[in-house]
Every structure is written in structure tokens, then in C-alpha cells.
Image 1 (cartoon, helix red, strand yellow):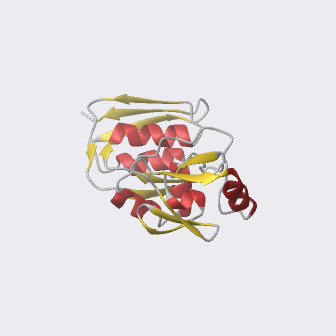
Image 2 (cartoon, rainbow, N blue to C red):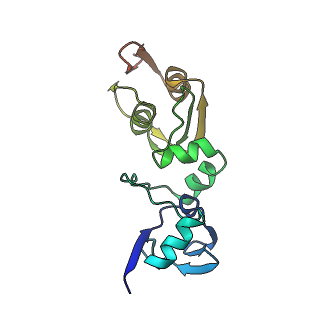
Length: 170
């Protein structure tokens, strides 16, 4: 019998209930994920779970989502921010995203790309963000200003070209 491999990035992505980090309840059956987060279903099991809406097959590539447990817990508090992590950002102007620990520039790049802006230019040294949080803003310019507001930086925003340049304030 042929098996189908499913990479479980996040249990909510599959719409499955997780009882622990590597156990998933799909179509009334418990599956254990391996060390790579992969579970195996037969084609019949996959079809049944898909028909019931418990599993969704995406035609396009899913993004490589890497989040810490703390970041995942925070992302799960805001549905729009969670869906932005998996490439399903809300198509309107509103920005809802998880600001990850680490690079300010990488987080700004995500705001731009997830919300269909053309480019981010970042001038100056990168800044480390120590704590993850949810960013909710009316639009990309406001989200950019909110994200850099705690730092000595300012944005140059070209809404017509959909580009943002962030400059270190000297």
C-alpha cells in the first residue's frame, strides 16, 4: 500500500489536535511525527482526512517556517499573524505578523514581502530584537514605523513605488 508523507510544520496548519509536540489526532487516529516533524498517512487515510477538512493539500510550496516555542505560542494568539507565517497573509492593507527574535532587518523584509511591497532598503547596522511579539498596524508604512520606533532609525516611504528605505539616525 502506498504511503503519503506529510511534513507537519505546525499542528494548526493541518487543523489537527495535538496532544503533545509530536502526536497528532487526524480523522480519529493518533499519528506520531518523527524527529523531522513528518507523519505518514496512506492515500486512503489522507483522502478521508482531506474530505473531512482535517488536512488541506496546498498546491504551492509552503514556506520554511522556523519558530521557537515562545514565538509559536505568541503567533497562535493572533490568527492573522499565524497565517502570515505560512504565506497566507490577509490581502488587505492591514499588517498582522509575528515579530521574531533576532534581526530587525529580517523582520522588516518579512513585512515588505508578506504584504506585497516591492523592496526594502536598509542602511545601517542591523539591530537585535530580543523578544517576539505580534505587530498589528493599519498598513505597511505604519507597521514599519511601529517596528523601528524604539530605535534611532527613520523610514523613507514611497507608497507609489511600494518601497521602504530605513536609515539609521545619526
